[in-house]
Amino acid sequence: MDLCSPSEVKRLLESRSLSPRKALGQNFLINPSVPLMIAERSYEAARAASGDAPLGVLEIGPGVGALTARLADFYDLVVAVEIDRGLADLFTETFADHENVELVCEDFMKLDFPQLISESFSDILAAGGSVSVCANLPYYITSPVIMKILDSFPPCGRVPLASITVMIQTEVANRLCAAAGSSDYGAITAAVALKASVRKYFTVSPGSFYPPPKVTSSVIGIVPHGGIKEIFDGCPPGDPECESFFRSVTEVISASFAQRRKTLVNALSSVYGKEKIRSALSALGFREDVRGEKLSAADFCKLTAELTQ
Ligand code: SAM
Image 1 (cartoon, rainbow, N blue to C red):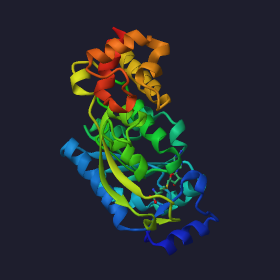
Image 2: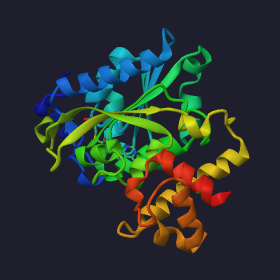
Image 3: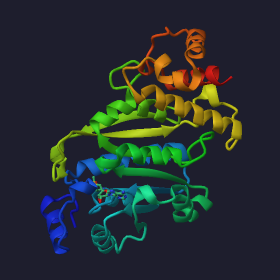
């Protein structure tokens, strides 16, 4: 069965009276080279991080299964989470003869992610293996999914995933990869940079999907780094002081970008007071009229340390 053939995808959907649901971001891959390239990137990153150990991968939103089929060629175990009951039933039938593919029919945003990982991949983890995440993400929840993945684990210590490889809107990919000071830089860039570095692999045009989305897509790799080294090095996972500091940094980031045109002194004044913010900025070598978009994630950590001491 060719899960990337447009006529086959339509036939499979029609066989169960299904049609692509826009509200669930259902744009299915129909260009066979794309799922292959995504699966290869995912696997290469996981293998590089895990040596010869067994490898499992969690796929969010398998849909008809174009990406799942390629992941199953590389990984020892694929666990796919699909919200749509109709697609989940179709998927179960399609992959009935794949022993290394399992399906969970649930809303990814509602499930307990660490529990899913530890239960679904218990054999892989018991054998010293690793788990990765790979997905062609539904566009309506791109950033919430990424933040859920990163925020599901204690802030100090490495997110226990060998690789995170996802296809998202190019506009969001650019935001995640943006350097401080650039026009694409924002709260999500800094919040993700606190836990991981992001690299863009390649872009995918709308014609590679059925139905075609209105925007261009990009495949990115999110590499958890265990906390910005110069700030969180030596911080034991679960350390309450470290976790509380991390929470403060996150709050400072979100307040700093809540009203983009505001200077940091104005954006943070209700919590820390203008004088304290001015002296913290000056201690870090920033002008007092600086805005949030000029500060890297490491700068936000240093600013928070000055403000909370
Ligand atoms: N992986 C398939 C592919 O590449 O052709 C489908 C990708 S499609 C962009 C997104 C998929 O995510 C759909 O199958 C959709 O039903 C599913 N989905 C949407 N929201 C979800 C959620 N909250 N939890 C799990 N799956 C979801």
